[in-house]
Length: 107
Image (cartoon, rainbow, N blue to C red; front, side):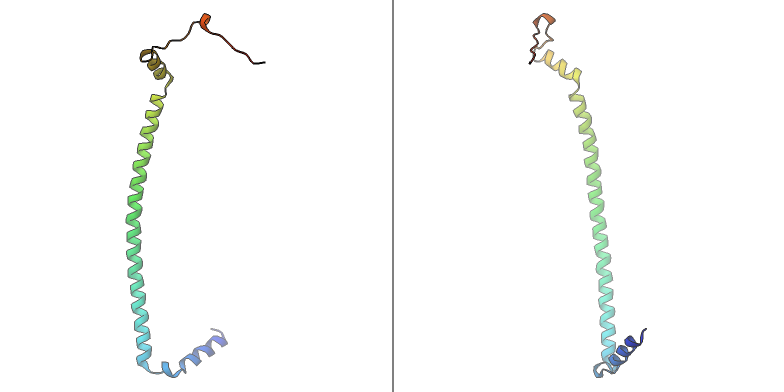
């Protein structure tokens, strides 16, 4: 401690309201109670947040799994052979012959 802080501590001890041991004991007791309550509250908050985190991680994992399935399904439905087969079978479309094609060129 520096000289200034020792002097301020000495002045604080000379305070008449702190000279009685009962007041100091009450202050120490209240400090301990508040400290204990803060530890309990912090522990409870940590447990609550950990449980919330686990729920969110499970949800994330489920969404990632669903995304993978949807990407697979999308690639299966968007495949060129499937689109061509649907166009041919359901819409009666066919690839035109070379003689039926016309090309338009811009100048």
